[in-house]
Amino acid sequence: MAEQPAFFDLGARPPTARTIALRVKQDGAAATIDEAQRRADAANYQEVTCRSALNPVKGMPFNWTLNPYRGCTHACHYCFARRYQTQFELGPDDHFSSYILVKVNLVEVLARELDKPTWTREQVAVGTATDPYQPIEGQYKLTRRSLQALLAARTPVGLVTKGPMVVRDADVFAELGRAAGCTVYLSVPSIDEEAWRALEPGTAHPLQRLRAVRTLRDAGVNAGVLMAPVVPGFTTHPAKLEATIKAIADHGAAFMGANIMYLKGGTKEHFLGFLASQFPHMVEGYNRLYAGAYAKSDYVSGVRAMISVLQDRYDLRRRVRGAPGQTDAAEDQGETRQAGFDWDGGP
Image 1: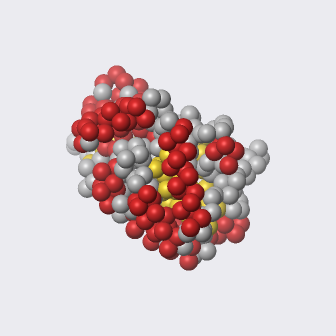
Image 2: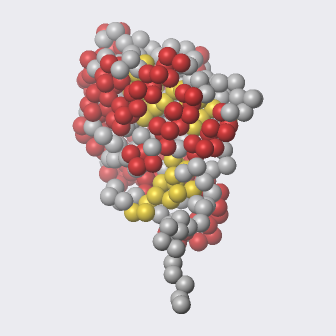
């Protein structure tokens, strides 16, 4: 009698992210991510296993990061995390938003790390290299289960996202805030619809994100807005800045921070390519403004001055020192950080 296939065969254990990287380098992305599922959002999702969940970082107001996914379907053209994708030979362009690695064993690994006697309950920053509430989170719930593990370990959390799905976990955030400390940052660079459509093609409407801030605040969560990045020529007109800052205040944000866009590594090449394709008249100006990774200091100072005036006008103060993101000290040094994070580790 012929051997019958096992109906409940779960298959082999998912490969590690390192294994995927080696396969991609050898065979190319299309040939390698053959186990990925193509979903309604047209992205490929590859389940992988991770050896560690918490990632140590240096030079930031926090020492640990957590990223349940790698790559992001939000496809923001300015995203600083695009450059990390080059570590996987995937490149910072379409592969960043179309090939998403899902760390299926993340929660179990995290629980073991939090249970170690050496864990001192330092703050963990969630969402530093990928959005923890991109649509696939609705299926895997890795972010929610990770937050529950952090709550059980009484570990403080700072989380940044563009995903309105964040309101689903308002109960966990509120409890975390009471037990250990928790701050949620919604990234809303601008409420200008033309800028949103051009720069953030896979994200929810900016006002939907601001409504999420209101919902979180009503649930007792310390939630505010990162107007980050501020993108020269797209969101820097004084009227656009004022409209966004007024909307942030109107939606009850507990705080607001703003950073001027920086362009490093693969992100810069991608962004300039995007401009050349969609806004060629802006390329020359950007080449002058961004001779290096950061915009010219006099330009940055001018934009910051406008934002500061508007923050005062609408009674929005800067983020408190020590929260994930740009500190007053960093600002005094002339550093600009995008989306509240600037680190060289990788997920």
